Length: 305
Image (cartoon, rainbow, N blue to C red; front, side, top):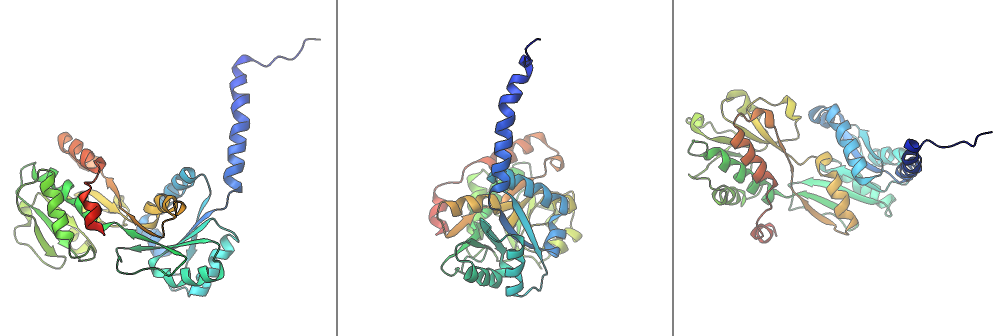
């Protein structure tokens, strides 16, 4: 009787397979990260995009990440109940700003669970003791927008239009101008309220849009645009070349990592989504990639605080 011999080509698989099984067991046995969401956000962000982000963040954290859907008008106690129904002992729970009261209520009942609120650009508001505050780093975002604008100005036009809803703070315009100037952009940017109509907008190299930009995009579709929005990029006009995304899904992975470092007040820059197929010029595309990847100057750390 011949002894059974394992084919040599199967030996690597037999070594790797137990490791894969062990890693999968560790993944599913770890406490999940929960993110409270609602229907309006899901429609805005896009279901396919949410699923992709959920998988991405789960893999990067190597623990399950689960959305907790609630009604837009849910009371704080029912929001807390929905979270507890999703997991009795989660690793961390994240609430959008509109459910801040639910975060406070949940934290009072479960002080041992890491509880955080995505505060957006509301830098002036602080969180109570024991709750983590995740803030959008407006200084970094506006500086990057200036750097991006500079690449279009090099392409021939004379100025950039910045439509401002004032959610970035009083220093935003100076920071934007600094980013534009330091990246080689010439000319003086023109700053407008979102409700303003600028008669010479066709001459702008590019347009930066903060806040609710739907009215502008409906009126004007000729200039390359940079949009600050949670909207699914596939739903934007073809003139939108880049999107700054500071949604909970975009910031979740980095927020968990900062919480693990012990930070209770956390500033995170937006994810910048470059819609490469909409940028027709190859040189411009390479320049945009370069400035998006480039590190921020140290001076911004001083301006931020």
